[in-house]
Length: 275
Image 1 (cartoon, helix red, strand yellow):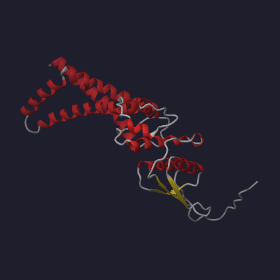
Image 2 (cartoon, rainbow, N blue to C red):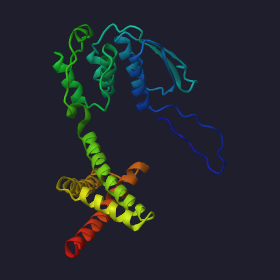
Image 3 (cartoon, rainbow, N blue to C red):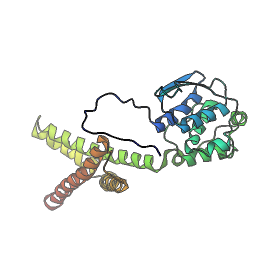
Image 4 (tube, rainbow, N blue to C red):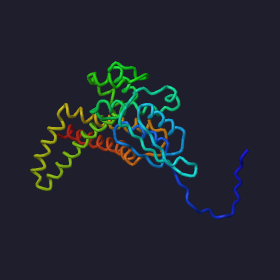
């Protein structure tokens, strides 16, 4: 059995090379299927999954050339050329070895028919798209048949998913709240001109936001914005790795609705009491 014997008391110095991440490499390799020009990736890790993905690309018709495969070299350079796709069938013996094989599905479809709509696609969305074209997504996606079929229309929920729907609802409610605050501050800004201008703007402001439809939209936006902040907090498994944008969303989500709600209820309550 091999052993590692460490003798302490000495200062450590030197450099340690770091190779690329495996998940990043497996995500970038299928991008070679999107173009007929060669794609060169450097500093690839020396892992079996990278070799397996290279074999998968070879089965689809792409050629791979690897340099730096000697043990004394650190990191490898792989050039993938997919000038011609000869097969759209991924052998099961290769696919079963790693889940990342599904990443070739999107580039193969995009290579055969460009112009697909933007936005994140779930695995179910790809399956729905292939089944509507008459193919089984778990067996094959024949390029010759795809070229003869008409591109179907898909519902928004197939492509955007629940997360993007929540993002759109948050954006819509945020725009309503922003419009309310902006018009409110603009009304105060008219006071710098004259009190009569401020009163005239106030009448327009009140007639606009106290319309039944806009009142309902404002109250719904307050509730939805706060509910989405609570949902985003509930969905988080850990506080680690939280981006600044997510922190700002949580801060605004928990502070803006209560502040606006208190202001709206106070001003409307005084208006109802004193006119």
